[in-house]
View 1 (cartoon, one colour):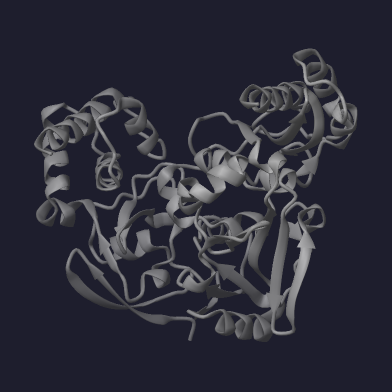
View 2: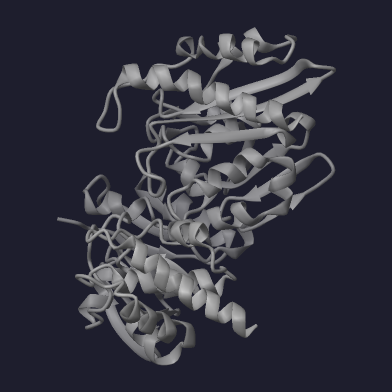
Length: 285
Length: 159
């Protein structure tokens, strides 16, 4: 039988109190777009649902000279419309535009998307490629977790039970300003990706000065394409170089076969998606 | 315990109710007799349960009823009485034959209203994106897009 408790909070302090009190029993609910299907399919039970949907103080996109700060309760619609992100982190805007559908984007939040830690989370590859840092918070204070260390397994993160995500930091740099995200799904809307890829690229005098690649739905967690990155560093930017390096992406990923696609298909299209993301950015330079 | 008191204003009427924490807004609304909010996939895929919560379109099957406490909900039926754009959309859906079995219609109309409210123009590609989270199994998308396009264009001409 389904059995849940419920606490509704409106301030961060109340949320942290509730988390401290409930610890492992706590289940934060913001947009509820993941939590309700989980309840329906009995993936979670006997939890205290902590409603943070109205926690307005964590809904913001701000900038300083060096960084962008995105509050965890920022909705995907907010990301889609942000001029700051369009300028400094376009890959994240691409991901927002491809996220579920416009209605779901009104509810779903960036904090929820990464806290759920689905291997297919749409905002994860851009955040990995953009070198983001997750700022978590609990009653004992704040902690910075580099996004590379944040995802620890399918639906598992480095967050402690009493912690929640406060915000996400993204550095402002030329590479991040030249970023792109591509998602391959079975349907244009509400699709869980078959393969997704984000890339950031800085080209100086025709040579690749900086490159970061990240993929979704091809491993238990969103992953970096480090082999391909190494092959590209310092090279002349050309279609041939991109194509050759992208074809080695299979060394960075470990896809499985599931209802959406086979392992072999994912390996094949991953290199194509990475190539296209890089070419698209190259075309902007 | 495990039940909470909520107050939600639905289509202008204040409703007080006791709900379980895990109850969806969809089940709550249907339980209160708002049968124009349809129950389709119940996992956010089909969009026929779309309503306006505190001014924004949401899928009520993936929203907790408890999260609507203190808030305002409008469904297709209520909007059809009070909201000009919705009235025009409902009329356009009939005129364009955009209703076959009618099961997706309430969600399509609310999604269309949200699109026009947010400044959406008479642009077929944009309209398709706006209703991309709403499934029609009679494959009647063309007429639905036509109906929303028609209303958006008439509004543009008035401006």
